[in-house]
Length: 476
Image (cartoon, rainbow, N blue to C red; front, top):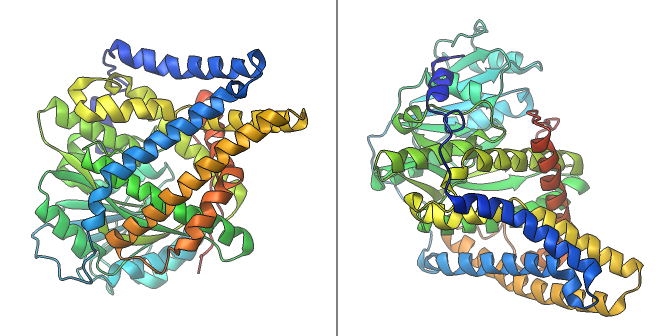
């Protein structure tokens, strides 16, 4: 273990458990009992209430949409400035690119960082024990000799701010922590090896942190891109609009100071804050999500005013799963890591010490642990009613689903309008396709998401720690 791994163990909330308020146990156990109770109504009544699990699922999702719509309303007045010149900032920026068998995309990602309007002070390409031709690619592109395992190279003779760190394979969190020991910049940016930054991303990030002194962690806007075949384009279609809605949601949670999700594919941290909480947890499947909980916790326990943010002007394109199997693996890992983190932070649920994060966000996340199970149960019941020819029930359920689809379509269009004003991305989000996705999702992509999350439950319950890995191919 390097010094950051050791530091993590000293401050880990899961190794030093704190007593949780009674409400946290009531909510955690309650969502399971509620689901079982609602499911039992499927055989106990003959009315539309037999589909109570589905009604609760639809009602909960509608509540979230209303909440997000109200809290994201300021984006109506937030027109993106066109290619402004960000204010000068004295913040130094270091970038870590953790890479494991990412040879096909490394040069493209490095090129996007080396053509920034404002250059990073230091870029570390951290090779996490790759077994593909990563070394050959880097030797040719950086014109460096291969460093020994556990060592970092000197600066590249062609790119003087780029360094190559070679490690034995130990996972992304370990790679990030080891890289941090070689970075002493004010800001640390983590960029996945398959993510390409917009040319002004670093300049916009420095400007934002310069203007918002209390922000210690932030993410930018990610646009998913899949392999350009039929399967890939279908998945990209759904994921693109999913990402639009997700980033609008993150903006809403940022406004109520409860943002927990900072995408590791493009994340920014104040280095001092990241070091204070011990770096990244190599035992968690979603180290980028888990560390934000510790930042919030540290801020509360030390009476600080740390905040997290999503920056609309910091943008990038990231590779996304292009096959159903790789998509399910990704969502399985994401959800299993979410469950891990929720379990490790039970004491935050309903705890007024954490303000709106404890009183609103964490209880909602508690219900989210079961949302995919509710969704799949509701769909399974609909199939059963179809097979058993219970037509009054089927007609009633389909009426609810159609009403919800119309409601969702309005929200989808609204989200795209806000997203365009916020980010300036108009050509990537046609309104017609937003409408189309809202009617197709409930019977396709939404079920796929829920299936991946349910697999995440199995992954979590069996204590597995493997990510699953998609074969890396350059998207375009």
